[in-house]
Image (tube, rainbow, N blue to C red; front, side, top):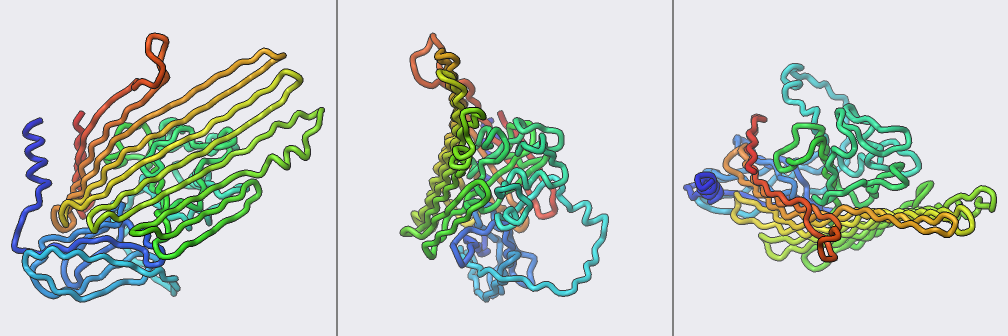
Length: 441
């Protein structure tokens, strides 16, 4: 382990050479949202980079000279600018791309069939929020139900939003919201998912062969990211569907932005209208609340706090002295610090907590019963992206999860950790598509 630690120290410490380094963030000009996987290239040279999940990029080992930088992203205007770099210069260059409507013409596509099949990634899928809203939906736009239309994914039944990915059940799929794990992310006993489509920025689905930083689960990984909020203007949006109403507010605050979004069903008035003494129709509603605030503490530091709160409430009056009341839902919060250690070393560090609670109260002929089930966990995680050289990115991750369960009769009141584990891992990705992933436990 000492040799491994020494090797990591050598790799993570940036080396000094007679060459320049170019780094920065790529964002959306209209709202300040980061743009992951944007292409940045120095025209006429093989030098370039792809922005990471936070929109950060770095190009190192650039010989001194004058270059034309080209930044491209689908759906945005191409950015070009000439710049002159001196030897050993570390230049910070942030880009804000403006959205552009693409007008397609007749296009003839020619390709090597077998080469394209080799480069395809059938186990990975990335979707934007705009695409999710355009997919078919039943009553309410639903993220999980939309994914069931894709190959390799099957629904448990017509009334369930659970995902069966390549044979793995819903309980084997890790679902993350802003890197917070969510348990049983559904409403109405699985009929709808907990994801309100308005605050969602994008999602990544790994059906198999997921990156090392997602290690520790049995099946697929669904990573959902909320929007940061509009950094330029205060904005309000909303909508009404067959079963629910939703609204989203966002705007700038100092050196950052905020976003809050809520959704709630309005089924109670309808159910109350058709309820009689003979049919015993229950009362039911659910709601979701997403919130996020981020601040740029300095050009190299950013702090983000994100949270989610959702509940289902079912009341069923059976007879005099007999009733069923069930209340369940998720609560999750995370704090993330992003730091640029050097132009070629980018770090993410976060603390996330998640809780799922289900409470059931019953009464039959004035005899009460009560049940409570819950799952809590706390995760401390750190990620490092090292831009070693052209088309060579090394990622390092350390994860400390801790699951909690209610105390037993031999312990004092409170919550005690039932499972504690720590793991560290690193993986190397190259532009040629190769990669190595090694786990240390």
